[in-house]
Length: 153
Image 1: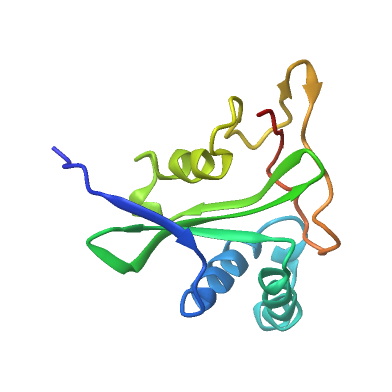
Image 2: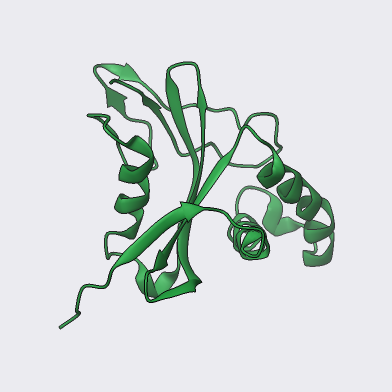
């Protein structure tokens, strides 16, 4: 039986930047046509793009950690806000910690007091309107941002 452990969610720190870059690149490597590129070429092209993206002030990155071990990142969420919509661009949880509610905790954290959100990766509707977005704020990735969520206070 698993025992519940306290978690913390906090903004990306300078020492966690490399973990986010590497896990993002590894995950994106087999998406779209990226799997056709030689590995060295893929990293040469995408590493500076991801570095610039996570330094871009339009994106916010929150990390989830164990309170008892704040140096261990269990997952993170990359999100942005534009007008009245919240965009979840990427959500990552380490394999051994999946299916434990960490992704839900990350989403709920950025939703604050909002009433609606969705955690699926497929086109969906909230209040009868499709909220999936196809832009990645100018960054050339071969997949769609995960979720566009209408913010309702």
